[in-house]
Image (cartoon, rainbow, N blue to C red; front, side, top):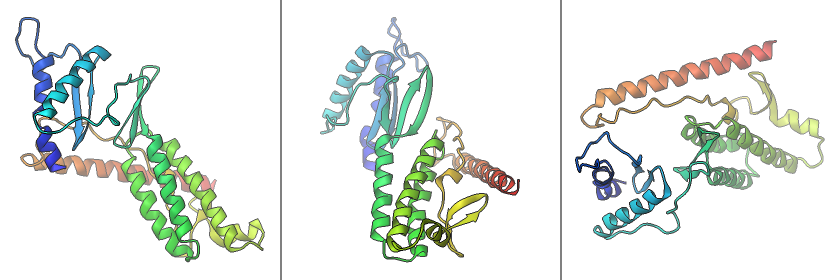
Length: 260
């Protein structure tokens, strides 16, 4: 990632100088007629513009920039698409619906997590319930943590349901002679308003639906992570506090529902 960032340094400045120049030939950082913007993470990046023709010109500029460094764009990953059709970036799908931008976990990311959960359940088909829960929690918590800041609530519910189906087959396979009620009472128990909680006396399966959606505060682009450490530490603590409060509200809501 460090090498990729060092190699691509200068690309954003190049685009600004080319597309932030007025008709009089003067460069203005705040002037961007065609809305050309670069967003990159290591060797992955996207470039936006207000029309396809400008993007084709941008593509030629990027190719020349990378050619000087002995690199070239990946033909498989490089594409020009309309925001209304959407595109995938860093595991998320960016798309406008009736003029409103929605960021959701991508289809590829959902397939990947489903496959990983399925392989884990299959691998631990003969193991104890506690060990299986430990392994599944490592996967579900990590995936939910990554997507907690986008529109992922419906996706969390979908993955939870898929996992429940896998675990039901896992449990039925272990006790083929037992009825459904016996299997349910053996592996699922009530907890925090949830009747079907896959758990033991010591550990419970983490439900992605319990992850609150908390937006990340916009980053001040004038700050540097090495020179302005106090800003980033404060920003991180504020976000952690917002998440903590959201978790408390979510837990309280489930408890009230259970009592009522």
